[in-house]
Image 1 (cartoon, each protein chain N blue to C red):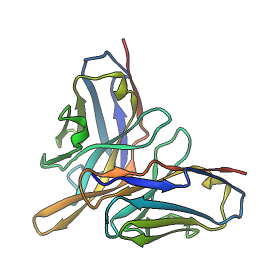
Image 2: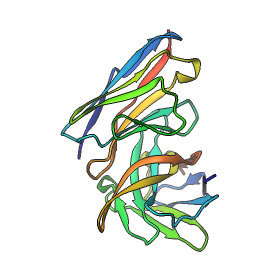
Image 3: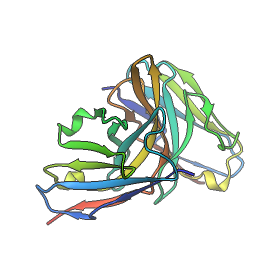
Length: 107
Length: 127
């Protein structure tokens, strides 16, 4: 199985900040990586696929990059609704696996 | 607009079978290149893929569940379902159904990301 790790596990930020979350795969996944946002008590929301392609309707302050084993999710100009937990997910090989999540909370 | 809704018992006895249904509304479950999956999330923890199914009945499962999970589809009712046998307390989680995009190369199709989620339903395994 491909193991996914994320760093940091949590971070504190303020509205307007630029936030970067890192996701690392235990082996190369090419660009077959997705990102999700999950607010407390809610289902995950799909943000990005193929490492850097924004899902329709996702604000442009979200961006993704990377390939192989190292990926980043960047949120520029953090907004109040962005305080949430973010998960990466690889779909390069079965079983599909998720990272453990990065919680972004208010500083 | 497509909508997914999970339904099923919120309490299952240990050693029993956890059974859930996902009803797809606003569109057909037989849509091209759409797979249908189950993901679970134990309280306070991360996400775990359980398995996925295509409308023709072909499935992909997570081996970590040691064949306890069975996913099936009923195109006549636009539903797909999950059965998880021999339930234990470790199976207590919020269970989500979700639509997945399929990536096809000729006859070979691969399950990818989850682009639409149900609201989730909490299932507790306890006596």
